Length: 126
Image (cartoon, rainbow, N blue to C red; front, side):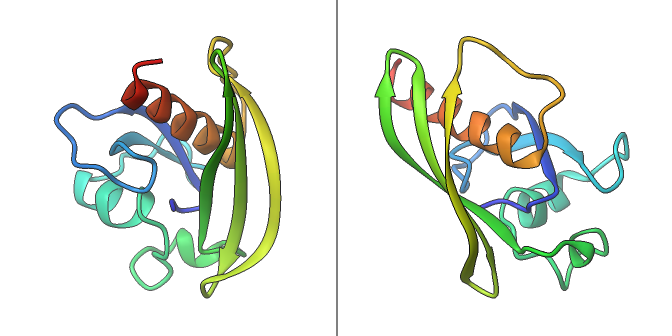
């Protein structure tokens, strides 16, 4: 899971595993360009459910996104996702992520699904 406002960037070096599989640097969709301290990245952005810890997260309709890899076809990954609030799904769907083609202007859901798929491919050596 990760905060639904989190726009993940590159994985941080020597990071422990998190819901996106790697601790990611990045920015907040609610305040693009704002510096996010590493502790906030770890405890709020990468973990989700930060409503009580982060004023920006408190503005979101959802608490977190969850992801599941459904299929991998040579770097084209089917990612199932759910958006949840209070640990209950409020929306679900599937994204087809082609990790060979990056999209820089994607929103939080697609950027997080891409980060999740990329981490999955790194971990399986794909």
